[in-house]
Image (tube, rainbow, N blue to C red):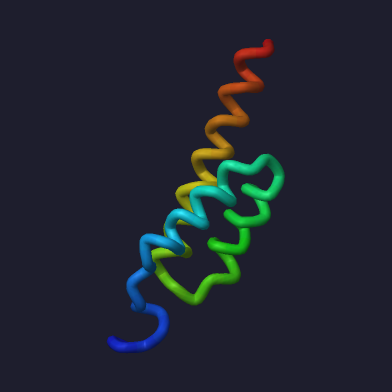
Length: 67
């Protein structure tokens, strides 16, 4: 499967755009879900999964902090 769109290198500009989207409240959840489930690029899929895990951990820690 080498040479398919799934293995394309993600540009620096694309990474900057992703980081900016992930910094915007509520948009970050939509962007992370899109990266996880909508992207054909495996690197972006993995990054989306990692972003959702970090968001979940942050939410749990925030909830524990307010107990």
